Length: 437
Image (spheres, rainbow, N blue to C red):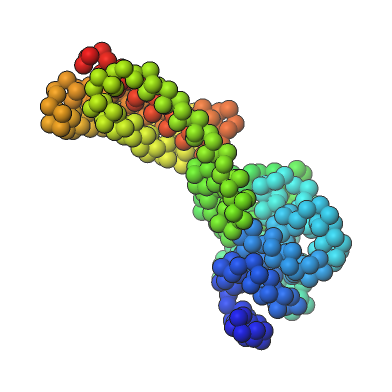
C-alpha cells in the first residue's frame, strides 16, 4: 500500500490495527518509510501508538511529527505516558512542546518533571478517582457516571480502585471497582473500603515499586507526597512495562549492549559495543599472560595445550550458571545479607560435587586419550578447584558489586570469566609442572 502511494489505504490499514500492533509495524519500517507513514497520519496520529514505540524509533517519529502535532498528540495521552514522551525530548524541544500544550495538561507534566528519574512520581498517572469518606456507594457510582457524561478529563480512562480521602486529601482507604458494583447503593464507602493500603512515596524507585506489586499482588497503588497527600496512582500496566524494561536492561548489559541497539545506526552500535569488547580484550590478555608463564611446560607436553581450554570453559560455564541465579536473586530481593552465607555455602557445595563428578569423567577421558593416568589426575584436580572457585565467585562477585553500588548485571560477567580463566589455566598448568614434569 505504501509503495503504491495509496495514502487512504495506509490510513485505513493503520486505523484497523490495535495501537500496539501499529507501533510494531512502524518499528519494522526503515527510516524513509516510517517518515512517509507519519506524514500521512500527521493530522490524526493515534496518541497511544506513540507510547508503545521503542525509544529510538519514537525519537524519529517525534522528529517527523513536529512540535505542533506532537503537542496535540501528547495532550491526548494519559499523564504518565505523556511524561514519558516529554522526558525524551531535549530541553529546547520540551519547552516548545509544553508551551503548545493546554495549561491543565502542561501543569501535570511539569510536576512530573520535578520528581526523581525512575521514581514512582515519574511512573504514576495523575488522574485518579477520589471520593470523601462520607459518601455512599450510590453517590460514588452517580459521580462516576456524571463525570463520564460530562467528559471530565480529570478522571482516568481506565482505573481499578476508587481512593477514599480525608479533607486534607490523604488516602484513608481504597475500594476495588468489583466490590463497589456488588454493593447496594445506601452502604457507606467507609464501611467496605480496604483500610490497609501500601502507600508509595513519590521518590520510591521503580524497581521497588515493581517488587511491592509482585509481593502484594496489586493491580494499583496510591502514590503520596512528603505530606502524605494523594498525588497519583500506579497501575499494573505501568508495572509490567517496568519489569520488562528492567529485565531487558539487565540482559542487554550482561551482553555489553544497550536498549534500542537493534534500531540504531551502524556506527552508533559499533561505538557502543567497542568499550565492552576492549575490556574483554584486556581480560583475555591477562589469561594469556598466565599461559605464558608456563610456556616451557606446554612445549614439553603438547597434551596440555589440547586440554587446558576444557578446564577454563567448564569453570566459566559453571560460574555463569551461579552468576545468573545470584543476579536474579539480587534483583528480586531474594538474596540479601541475611542469607548470603547460606547461599554461598550451597553454591560451594554444588561446585564441589560437580567438580568431583566432572573430574572423574574428564580424568578417564584424558587417561584414555593420551595414555597417562597422571595427566588424568592433574586435569581432574584442576577441574575440582576451578568449579569451586566458579561457585564462590558466582555469588560473591555480584554481592560485592551490589555493596559498592555497582550494578551486578553490568560488571559481574567480566570479573567472573577473568577469574575462572586465570585460575583454571594457573592451577592446571601449575599442577602439570609439579606432577608431570
